[in-house]
Image 1 (spheres, rainbow, N blue to C red):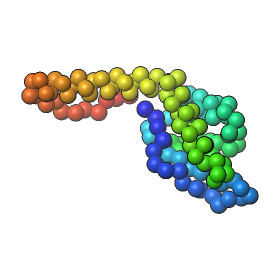
Image 2 (image 1 turned 90 degrees about the vertical axis):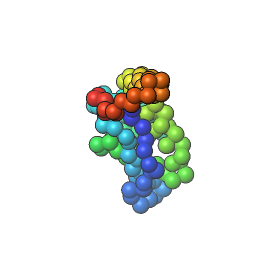
Image 3 (image 1 turned 180 degrees about the vertical axis):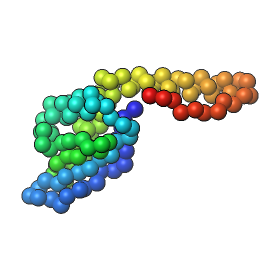
Image 4 (image 1 turned 60 degrees about the horizontal axis):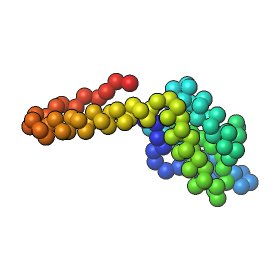
Length: 120
């Protein structure tokens, strides 16, 4: 599931009142996810096409320091909504249910299953 990791990092010094910020994301991003995320971010009105972009698994955006917290909340909202739209939330819930079922099996039987990373 895609999520924001770490704290925002200021990339550029303020030019006027604007700064460029960098926020890393966990996981690799599909082209569809990127486009959906950027569309949602621009619809909110806080960001415009040139003020938010994605490079690799990092979101870059331009905002005033005083608006940073609001911007991060909006970015988190867009991430949640796009995860739902792409089905990542359902995958995460299914993986959690498998982990819980496995723990119950191990506890009931005394057998422990070697963890294997799931393919996506």
